Amino acid sequence: MDALIAAHEQQEKKGNLSAAITDVQKLIDLLQNARDAVADNPDMAPLHLAKLQKPVKQSFTNLEDDLKEVNKGLNAYRKALDNKFKNAVLPTASNDALASQPQLINRAIAMHLLREGKFDVAKTFVREVQENPVRSGVVDGDTQMEGTAEGTAEGTDEEMPDSQQQLPPEDGIEQLVGSPNSPTGLQTKFAEMYHILDALRNHHDLSPAIAWAAQNSSALEHRGSNLEFELSRLKFVELYTSPQTTSPDDPFSGPLRALEYARTTFPAFSTRYRHETSLLLGSLAFSPSLQTSPYTTFFQTPSLYTSASESFTREFCGLLGLSSLSPLYTAVTAGGIALPILTKVERVLEASRGQWTSVNELPVETPLPDGFAFHQIFVCPVSKEQGTDANPPMMLPCGHVIARESLEAHSKGKARMKCPYCPQECHPREAKRVYI
Image 1 (spheres, helix red, strand yellow):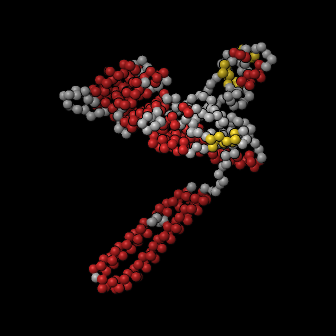
Image 2: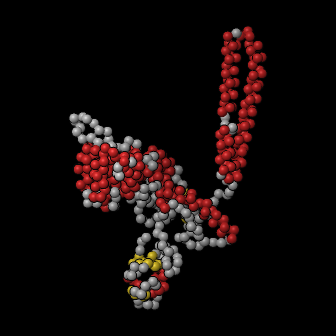
Image 3: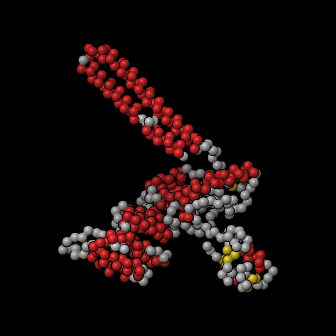
């Protein structure tokens, strides 16, 4: 990578077009001066043209020399790129599970555009999908059905329909965006979310977010969310650090205004956030020298607004039954991270003529970030095998957890079984499935 960086820096210094642009400008100025001289004295035109011949020729020579440096730098940069990124055959989709599900791909794209606030682009995309339907694949050997821009609702646990089945119109992607005069409820929700986020991120206006949190207070509390209190705490900080005024119409300013806000708002949070509210109120005693007080970390407003925006997006999407990140973004990012590893595994299996038969597992570990872990990871202490939906973890009455297959193997032919890790005995049907 160092060679590539060095070639890039060399291209920026010597291989740019600044010298060529300067010489071109000089040539243009030379021609314009000659044109003006001929226009002022047409009788001297042959003389002016004769004087112009040598400078123009020299200008073209200079341009050729400048472009040689540019081409030389480009060739060096291209060689550095070729040495760093070797030519490789792109992976082929030999078992593409989504090849027969174009309606799901279209729905994911439309959903992503809505989540990003690109409502007009989403409408255009849906219209073009409807105008140009695609084939969903081969059914029963030689019969094809035309794919429609439809799919299952995102964020639900409904079973995915087979590719042979035509999805009902109410589940199509056209229901996501609606018509220009009649937007759907989902589009209206995302429009509201981006309106609140714009006020929160760009204008540091907490009022829309606080009003939304108060309106959905019960649902947020049921989810165990801290959003409503975080917004109220941020409002307290905003009032605390606001400039003090001497207007008779506004007797409360700065810390006094924050204290008045705390008196009316914090009692609702006293049960769950007693410690946090006590700390905020304690900071009022240090208002003359807040920066040197123990409470200065509570008033780092840039990071607080960023954290509040992320929390609001997560909770807003959570109430809609959606993840905070677009599933399309998550899938593409995870696929991009895992693609080199999977491509290498495919080459190794092809060279060794091996075959990986496990459906729910990969032959190698894929190092995805923590935020991309959505499935349970459990390794049975008895069989040393990773748990799956068909072989889930089971907790015995004693509290030890083993895989279902290990449970069945230990209890086979027995009315009661002994725990593999302690003396306690139990009946196999007393074991409970654990969701990790």
